Image (cartoon, rainbow, N blue to C red; front, top):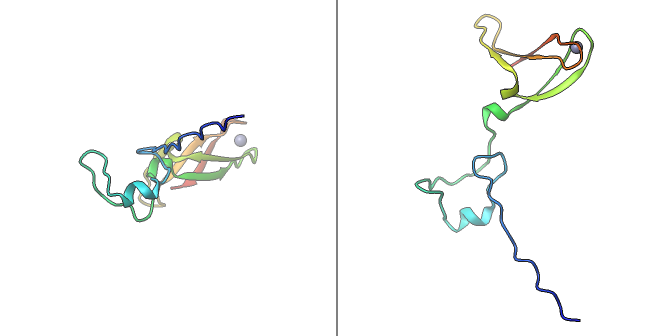
Amino acid sequence: MAASTPPFPTITVHYGSLSPAPECIWERGLSYGEMSVKVIKQGQKPESRVYRGACRTCHTEIEFERHEAKYNVDQRDGDYLSIRCPTCSSDILVAA
Ligand SMILES: [Zn+2]
């Protein structure tokens, strides 16, 4: 029985996503278009930051990304995010 050809290793680059770029790509000095910035530590886009909150009305606990909630600016008490509770539709407020 002939050995099957091993699958060609594929590298999936999620450009612009949260996934860290494969090290080998950066070590080879490849760049994306005009971009030649070297990523030392992959951060997280602000709108994709994950928050957790709990509903004060029904105690449902949720986890959501920042872009899913409404961002509210409050200079006195600090900015906060508001998102509708999936269980009772109350507003869940989480410090931004
Ligand atoms: Zn609720």
